[in-house]
Image (cartoon, rainbow, N blue to C red; front, top):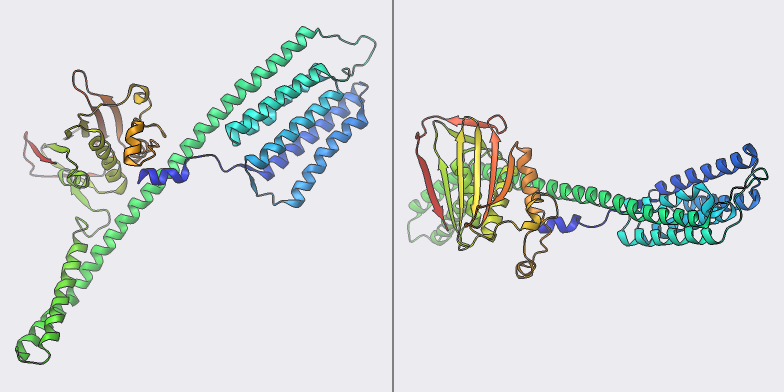
Length: 448
């Protein structure tokens, strides 16, 4: 189930909005015109102003064409946004060619298209834009018109210094682009994983509501069905066995009994009539463990009784989170899974242990983060699952929303297996204390 939800979310972002790209380009056009006017008129530097303004006006014309031809709310994928950002690189190259090449301090603007791509587009598109920017920077470093300068003393920059500027720009494009892409990718992964978590929780809440409606329907239909059963019984008694309608009445009685069985099944779907009823800790753990029986793994549940057994609100997030952790333990266990629960004045502690291989060293420090999995590749192929690593993340997120603190570790050698410890402070869960519990004695049962 986790894989099915995750597959629909995991992947690239939805692209770059055209309106954002148009606004950024208008900002660039405004800045370029202001810089040209300030340098030419304010500082008195001799610029090829006509050629420079023609390049800037071309960008403005492209912006107008895009706004007229396409809806501004349209999102551009890599195939459309990549060429538009490449055009910005080429437009900047044309301006730098006319105004000194690498000697122009505005050469740093090569970073802008690469950063935009790194935060919104695929890594391959960002790499191609980075290569284009570095290549164009090298080109204007070799071939460019002289740097405009007022007065007879025109500064002459050594070729080695210009080469250093190109190397510095190349390193900046690579390092800053990679850093921006990695940060944006982590943000996208977290957003996708949280969206999957919300879908899982919504699904559990929907199922819980359906269960409640089914139980309510069974309760409401019970009274009229009992009346029908009583009438059928009286009809059968009054007509006798020789009546021509006896077979029809017998069929009606069988159908009434069948309806009773169906209603009994609907009622048994839940432990109570309320969608979020309250249940003792031992019963809650039994509900969590029950779907994972009959897989050849013994599940031993120990509930340490204390003065006053906890009665916990049954909510979908808590059940799904615990169930996911138990499912993972059963999946990786060799023979058995041990679950220990203890209620103390400090709060509730639940520990899930298995005797499997434990957490792999390469992922042990990142367990609980989205898209981190310790499932072996061959096991993924056998199970037919993609192993996106969202199960622990969703379980951890849902349990932490209930106020839990989770720790993941391996059993100390020579034992093997994983240990997951969950602690709720006393005030975190909606817990009531059931009086009359057995003091100082633990109750244990096992299922396999």
